[in-house]
Length: 193
Length: 193
DNA sequence: GAAAAAATGAACATAATGTTCACTTCATCA
DNA sequence: TGATGAAGTGAACATTATGTTCATTTTTTC
Image 1 (cartoon, rainbow over the protein chains, first blue to last red):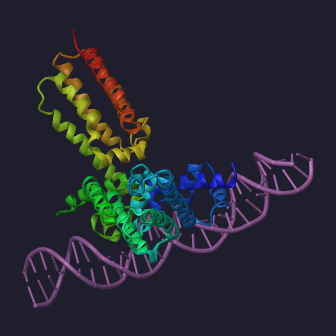
Image 2: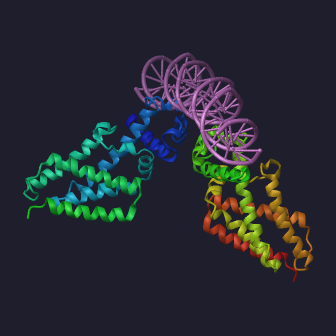
Image 3: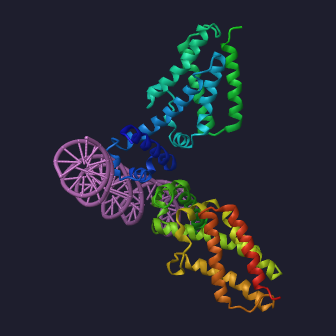
């Protein structure tokens, strides 16, 4: 196992433990135990506890992002692609138990303003994916010629709001309905008549 | 609210918090927060953290015991009473979420040997209840004339084993079947032909 | 079997937490 | 109302727990 694989293993173990106990209540040693190593050894791979947390969360967010990106890359119709992007992104957390728990314990992971975003780079990449789909729709003459950057920001904010409502505040069922309704409206609003 | 009621409130809050985080990871301040008081004030009611834990668990165990005792006291038929005692005792933890979690985190609450039993007094009282039902069955000529003390100890051990299997190791469904089977055999074994 | 890489565990500094207590606030009753 | 005791507070302190480092040992590589 090379260093990169080992780091992956470390981040995934760390995320599980942080999910179980929350940041403050997990000790570095808990994570070392989960990995079957000593904390001294763990420190050969990470700078400090905070760093480990951020890397573990980042890793989790990147998994999410990668899964969504892969699942839409081969979709020909740009409307279908847009719908898939939104739906896959939105439902992902229902499967990733650890990341969901961590998010519940630490809602600051999803920033209210991008100014205070610890994971700005990852969020930016997610927005880029969204932007590229919107741009494609316009380029292909399917979507109206709106301001892509502003729309990306708007839709991303709505998307984040839905995720928080659904998984952090767990207003489950009715929010999911709202999501589908909102998605329908947005797509209709986007389409050229 | 008098002192005793306040102590009850404290023990119940403490049990909830200990259930949530486990003994080591709960801070005295977490419990004070749950109660809406300062930890300084909490210390006017308990000696120290360990004491609070033991009192909280004791209180939980006594609730259990009291519930079972009340639910069988008015049963006329001693066989029915015996069955109810076993069943009520066995199923109680499926409802008491906090006590169950605490037990899962700290299985030493249920002792392997009565030598190392932190809650010996409570367990003794529970055994007394069982013993009194067995004695009544014999007195009324329904049960065979076995040695009551030894049988009490034996049945109590089996009972504890079932509780651990069911709630700590959560070997749920099949264990419940085993319990009903075992209960049937024991009752048949007890009855005079 | 020498050199490099990985891992250990003890040591240390610091932060977190348990515990105490002088002081403040609140309730009771003359 | 204001004296008196009970209840509660929050800062201070002692101790423990935990994060972090590093000299040493073990394992791997060639």
